[in-house]
Image (cartoon, rainbow over all chains, first blue to last red; front, side):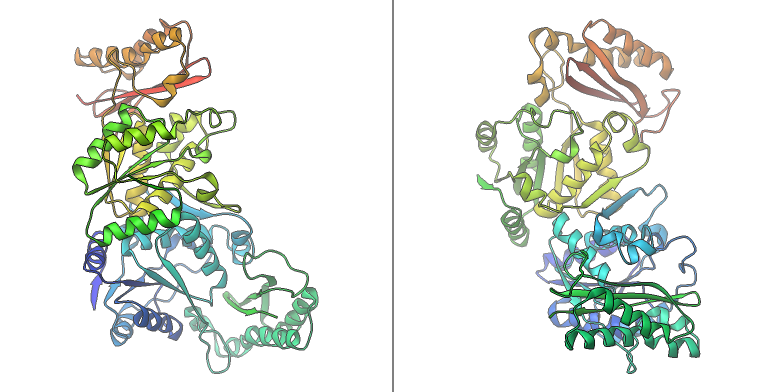
Length: 282
Length: 282
């Protein structure tokens, strides 16, 4: 596996691959890889000639007081995992390589899609995401880029950006990978102590319960949110950031489950903020 | 010459050209072509296998009360001129093709480079420019894109955007083309009546006078701006928008002509706003 830490050499290498007629699959990550990331890599491996994974903990998508400094990092372990998955190239640039002094260019998606959910809790977060992803697209010139459904709003925002800025590539959504007990895989799970790890099951349970109520005929969105809040309340340490249900296409408001919806949660355990979601169609 | 009015078909065609091993030169314009544009086309023709010209009067780079509605348009004349220059493809999309309903994604370069000169006179202008140019880059996937030095600040902003978002292409600056009497070619010159057309010579004269003073040893920026203002004052109809001298690299402030500088003017005659500039190195 080729390891590239310069924008120039990564771009040159990727463009040479394209010129040689190879399709490129890009998997953008912040590292500390888990099976969720690896399922993105497997998807890329199965769909593209060349697989490029990027590892970059992007400072501009973290807010003040968020966990940029403490975000878990283990590049050598990540390298081993990617080698095993037959990744062709790892792009792991430094911060100054991505944002040289005087950096001032940003890509921003406006509207409801970035104002709600994590956009409300984390102002500026999605502007940081769309900017770094635009840069990665221009550097790695992928035919397809792979994102996890775990960050449901992120992939919606990126799809809108790709569509509106006309990036010549396809976004592939990959389903959430969960632990056996239902907790969605996340690099941030490592922050949880044993008790919090146990209590964190309320996220997936709340979503599952709401889903089963929908299957049994419940259509009232307010009632479904209440049900999810009740399940989460079973955990004494859980502090709800948001419990929401929106139109899965554009995060528009919905009163009734009468179309494809996104049920989305963000819950804090101590200083650790976890998210989870489910798409439901009736 | 192929005429493309859809984003999808233009992108498909350009990507097929790239795949076939051809280099693409893009000349983004707002149409109503003059010899300035045609010199960009000639440059592209001499440097690239395939030349694509875009014509799109981009609504989002015009402010409220500016001349978007009245901006001169003549697509069939433009087509003839481009055929004569052996352009391969003309991309001329509609507004709704470029900005479908619900469009919300923008690219913005911040800092001094967009805050000064036309950025100060025309708030939001460069955000409109960088957004549409990003879209055109993604649609036409050029190896080189050609911009006129006439819009000196625009080309600086686009160069910064390309550098910072890592667009995989090169910006080529092409010198200003002038009328025989010195007036910089501009699609907006058509707005001028005979008297204004004559008086508009004060722009190029002011720049020339300041340049010749520099050659004779003047280094004081305040004095040079005063000299330009005096030349412009010779025209009774001229209303100065700005007369400025900045660092040519980043539009930083300068007191003395001790590096490469940009002398830049914007002057209104009635409702017609003209710009001109000169780069000077001592």
